[in-house]
Every structure is written in C-alpha cells, then in structure tokens.
Length: 525
Image 1 (cartoon, one colour):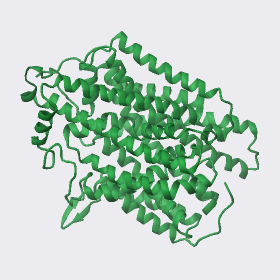
Image 2 (cartoon, helix red, strand yellow; image 1 turned 30 degrees about the vertical axis):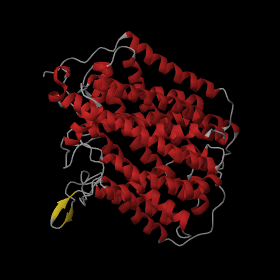
Image 3 (cartoon, helix red, strand yellow; image 1 turned 90 degrees about the vertical axis):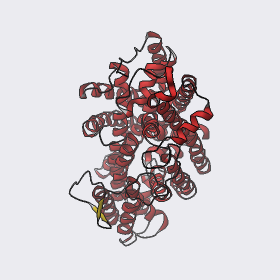
Image 4 (cartoon, one colour; image 1 turned 180 degrees about the vertical axis):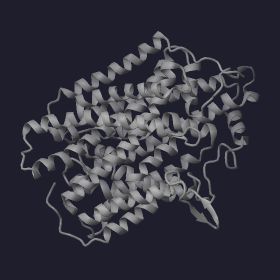
C-alpha cells in the first residue's frame, strides 16, 4: 500500500467544530455572570454537584494523552496498561478516606494551606512552588500532545514541522485560557462535564464505525486478537504481566505498588485534581465524587483501548480485512486514531469526533490553568503582600485571580513548545512520556503530605529538603536525563520502569521530611 493524502476537513465538519467552540464560550460567559470573590472564583462557593465534580475529574485525568495515547498503546502493544487501574482504585480508597476529609476541613483555598497549618508559611510556599513546577511540566506535555493531532487536522500532515506544531499548541492554549479567565473553576467544571460527554460520544462512534468496516464478527475479531502476538510475549489481549522485569512499565507489581503511589499523588497532593473535591458541598460528597470518577474513568479507558485493538485489525491485518483493507498507511502510531477519524468518518461525524479530541485536550488544560492560578495567588502572592505590609484588599482579590489565569495559560503554552522540541518520537510513547513527566514533583510532595497527615514529625527545613530529595532521586532514576548513570541488576545495566520512580522517590522524601523535629501547628491559612 502507498501513502495517500489525508481527507479534507469539510465545511460541515468545521461547522460542528465551531459549534463546539461556541458552546464552550457560552458556558464560560454564563459562569462569569455569577458575581463572586476570589475564593468563590477558585472554589465555586463549595456548592458544585457531586456528579459534575466526578465528570470533571474524569475529563481532567483523561485528557489528550488518553485520546491518542491509549489507542496507540493497544495498537502497537497489548492491554497491560489497563492493569494500572488496580493501583488507581487502591489510591482512590486511600485518598477518599484519609486525605479529602482533612484537606476539606482545613478550610483553605488550596490544599497547600493545610501544609501551612502543619509546618508554616515557608513550607506552604515550597509545596506550592513544586506543584507549579510539576504541573507546568506535566500539563505542558499534555498541551504539546494536543498539538500533534491538531496539526493533522489543520495541515493533513503526520510529520508536522516545529513551526506548525507551535501554531497548533497556541491555538488550543489560547482558547482554553480564554474561557477559564471568564468563569473560574465553575466554568472549568461545567465545560469539563460537557467535554467528557463529547469525548465518550466520539469514542463510541469510532467503535461502531470500526466494527462496521471490519468484515468480521465481534467473536472473530476477539479470536484474531487473541492469536496475535503481543510486544513482549502472550497475545494482544494479555491483561496482566506477571513478570518481575524492573524495566517494564505495566506489570502486576507496578500496578499494585507504583501505580498506587502515582495515583495517590495525583488525587491527593496535586491541586489540579484535588481542587475539584474542595468544590463539593461536603467532605463526604467530595470523596464520593472521586470514587465515582474512578469507575467512570475505567469504563472510558476500556473504550479507548478497544479502539486501539480495532485499529490494529483495520490497519495491520490486511489478511483479515480483504477487499475492505484501507489504502492509507499509518506512518506514526501516535497519530493512528486521529488519522482514522480524518480519513474514514463521513462528513459531520468527522467534525464531532475531532470536537471530542479538542474536548479531551481542553478538559485537562483549563483545570490546570485554574489550579495553578489559585495556588500562585493564595499560596504565594497574597502571603507575599502580607509580608511586605500590603493589605490583601478587595481590588487585589478581584483582579489577581484572572491575571494569574492569563499568566499561567501563557506559561503552559511556553512549556508545551519546549516539550515539542524535547520529545523523541523514536523512543517515547505518549502515555509513558506524560506519566514520567509527572513524577519529578510528585515524589517529594507526596512524601511531605504523608508526613504531615500521619506523623507529628517534620518542619519547614525538612519539608524543603524532602522536596529537593524527591526531585533529585527521580532525576537520577530517569537514565535518559543522565545517560552515564545506570542501575545494575545481577551484573546487567537496566533502566527502571517509570512506575518504580514514585515509590522509591516518595520513601526517600518521607524519610527526609520526618527527620526534622516536629513543631506546633501553624496558624490557620
């Protein structure tokens, strides 16, 4: 087969996409009409419905790396990534019962206000700064990945130039920042709710169309996939990897240990997701929204992984497709799903599916911008004003949140552009790339929160030392950062899988934090 040009995005498709953009703008405008103070702008007066909060958590946690990365994972691999959800459910149980009630009752604008109550203002500022660093890296990577399929849409290229990728990143970033400025966290949650519905609609539509194009029954497809070899043994339907290989990313052991640590950090110490639970009407409702979101998230993820398996049959098995085999060739596996959407969906439905891709991209972007802005304002800017003897007056509370949102949006766009130049398409898959970026900040932050929640040990100095420890340990564990630095196991150099970075770095950070002598509780933040 030879490569053919990508299909044209027609007027009807552009109309559907424009309608989606208009709907997002409308929600932002309606949310902005509700007059509120800065706390209300960032916490929605703690009156958001439980289901809306749950759907917002799903929209934020899925994002574009799931829209493109999950199908890529099964297109070229197997189902072992799904096993990471074992750790997700364990983590949700831990965060819902042990983290959220105490963080909610702290009564602060951000979860780092709780750290102020335990260790003082310096510790709070340090945690907030580490969060901003980690979230900039992780969400910048997500925004970069959103730009890849947008290039496919705008220019029909599977290998866009850096300039084209930068234009796509700016387009997604500016739109997401605009409606977040307008309505704050209330706009974020309601747009996320609409966006996750569109995302699910797009993936269900894709599955229905793929089943219609593949000339096999569901049972025959399952048999073919069961017989197809996976990348590391077994079939493409292999769900659990029982190997003890420390370099593998998705084994049962990384799911039980590493993924648990990663998800506890994501839901419990990352204000991007934890902020949602603080907007619920009570601690119990906040915890319930997190539990519900995990079940919804699992179902949506299964749909995306199913798309990847079907795309494998569609593109890689001409022996099964026969005369229905496609004429376009997949040049880059990370773009297999958007390529299918553009080339094989009818007009109108193509626009709806691409709107789902935009929704996945913006669902994580808008929440990150708002969370970073709230942390920058409540944890850094207002305390700094008080230290300088300046009042945190009504004018500051009215202007600072929106200015901070605009600033964070610009910073995220800049980091995404840097990520575009750092990413190595020959080595990095989308999902491991995004998850690996998150670990830099998470290890130290989780170590500090565990010390604050479950011990009486630690102080501002040990908190800062713990954050530095987590950052350094994670850097050393990623051998692609220090190529000369390797781990040796039974005489052979290996690179530890990404899910092991979290438990190792967190334990080291926790030990450093509790090494500090305990202090009396600080003032209420």
